[in-house]
Image (cartoon, rainbow, N blue to C red; front, side, top):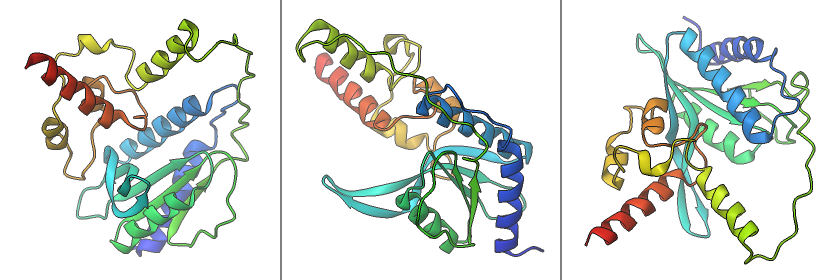
Amino acid sequence: MASLGEETTTLAASLYRHLKPLRLSGLTAVQATRLVTDETVRWAKRQGWEVAYEVQGRITRMTENGPKRARLDLVCTRPAQQPAVAIEIDKHGKVWSLQKLLSEVDAGRVALWVRWHGRTKVEVPGTVGLVDIHDTTDYRPPKRTPGPRSNPGSPVVQGHSQARQETLLSTSRQEQLPVLPSPDDIEAARTPAGGFTRAQLAAWGVAWPPPKGWKRQLNDRWHAAQARDT
């Protein structure tokens, strides 16, 4: 049986071969991350693994709002008592991502770090499988077209602000959701690995990849709905 380090190296090489053909030119950063994530999930499912998204990590860090629990982009559950595979997917090399993965290694999991653009000066130990595809993706974001200049209180700016908020949810309208989950419903829907399935997120109208703040927004909407009903 291969050691954890040997298995990490083997899986990192396999995922690299799968992602290497990707070309990201002309995509926004969000679109590129979505494509890389989708292809990573496709690779994992070909191995026969179950994939969970936005899984709670094992460490926390202090923020201006207090301690914040780590979240892993993907955690793959494997059969036959094999250790789970934790995966982080980044545009650049974030030190926080590496710290999250190292804590998973300490817990006996395989850790893979996918980076699709840019490098980091931080040293990546061999216990973390680095899948660096920035040399092959040909990432060149689309050119920006200048938008109209408006005052912050103008309808144009307010419309853009509302549109940014709505991108937290998928293209289906919020009011068309069959059920608005309560905070308890959200926590109860976690997989055994601690994350959420893509199908469950879609049922709540959450886009993929799940944007930052999606759970807070659902909670805020639920509380607002309760206040209206009282």
